[in-house]
Length: 125
Image (cartoon, rainbow, N blue to C red; front, side, top):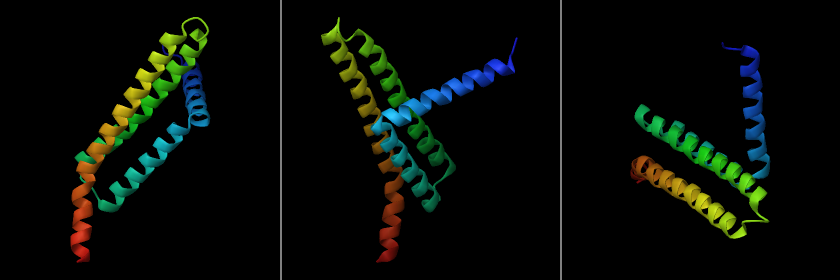
């Protein structure tokens, strides 16, 4: 049975988790800034609906990867005294996952926005 009260508690808990990541992870704040810049450029260039969808999904995916990275880092820190060499490998692999996602998002962003930049450059000539 659906409980609206439980739903609100779950929502509040999720917002607390988001707040934790925002307060404690400088990369998350930087990724939010880049996401805002991408949304601003999308608005200025009046990109197509399909491009909007891609840009928004990529922003969400990068942020979710950083949230997962933070969660796994917090968890592995519990194991640190006993399994230190595994902890480093886990953290390195998660950081690589975030980096791969961010570079992928950057590449797709360049593919989407490059023609719009070229149009502006050509109009200025």
